[in-house]
Length: 126
Image (tube, rainbow, N blue to C red; front, side, top):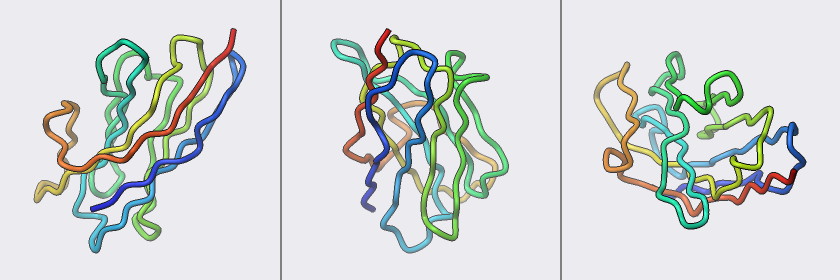
């Protein structure tokens, strides 16, 4: 499984970005997808996750109301819409995947994911 994240950039506080992650996998809808982020000098943290069908999602508290995760199983992509960005959102954002037999399952721990993309940098200026 190969994951390629894109869409990062530099925006002013209050701005928006749309991140995308393309998966090279035979059966994308067998995978739970997640987004994590890692700021300089900090540990990697969970941002959002989405189940296999895209019908359910789960967010870190800081992401609720500002970020939205979605997926397109026909295109093998998962997106993360970032709105109301703050300087503290500055980080490398990484997508992750894990195959599961459970249709409703969403994972939020780093150790629960098996595959990782290289990340895309989001910089929010004040």
